[in-house]
Image: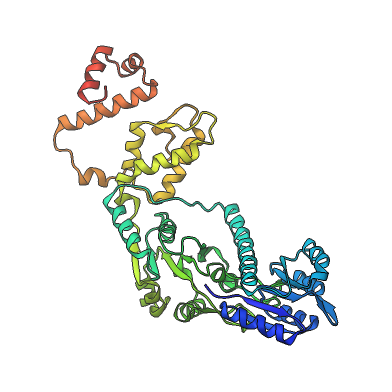
Length: 450
């Protein structure tokens, strides 16, 4: 993770230089000035992340620096250096928003701790603001769920690639869970304590994409009334997830390539390069090799992003997972119901397993949410599932060659449906089927349903 830009304001040349050496040894970039006017100019021109200012100076005070910082850089903490006789003033400054104060002469180790704490609080504030926006947008954080061989292959790759810093390209159809794969990689990586920042390129207007990714300086364009960090800066030390990378316009592709090669970003309207430590995971539902052949995607960017490729299988290739996913969605949406989490009937589950799922896991999620909303009883049956026709491929891939087998399957399903409609009351189910209760008990034992 990169160091911070720290403004030091002190009229004592020797103390100012000492603070500069201390900050440099800690990996930070010090900006040293001797008065309030120079401090105000730096705050106007640079994205300062911390201010350390003497409280008493000729021509102004640390309180003036604090006021300027709060006006020009509202997220930037201010640490005041004060002599014993001005402690009361320092306390008043903290009541006005200063982050901390340190008595002179100070201990170098103690000041380093105060600096680290102030920078951590600043980053925490930015992250909290970001997560509030994410929560308002309804972004779900779920784990990959299932037992199929196709999903196990994905998870094996996730475990192998997570500890590295390699860029990963996640491919697959819309709705398969590509962002979940990115989150799984991040959670298993050494960066798990830092942020994973998703950027959905297709959802951002083209004219705003560059500023969204790289940030912008105050005055860079109409409406840019303050400096704003981009998604790359937010992900410093963590992971940036670029969803729908195939939607990136050509000029943006050039800048993304530079960041991946050099690890340096510049905000729009600024000429101050910032070195960052960001792992990039990209995702697409497009055939990027076809896009390259058509001249719409850069081959050099493709190979930078695709150090490792993970293909997420569509739901029709992992039907064994449908029951597990359904159970997860029932728990999530069922807790909102007054009657609690509903169950789902066996015929309904079979219908889910027989459906083609063009919208993949996202479509299954929507189907179960709708069923939970409309279910007025304790069990979801087939009639509540908003699905199209069952897949034809199921019959073709496993043809029934014997009439007895077909009749047994039909009898099995009709019994389950009758029990579902009869709320598991056997006598009522027998009447619905037009058989005796004794005959129904026989058939239940025959099909292993008793």
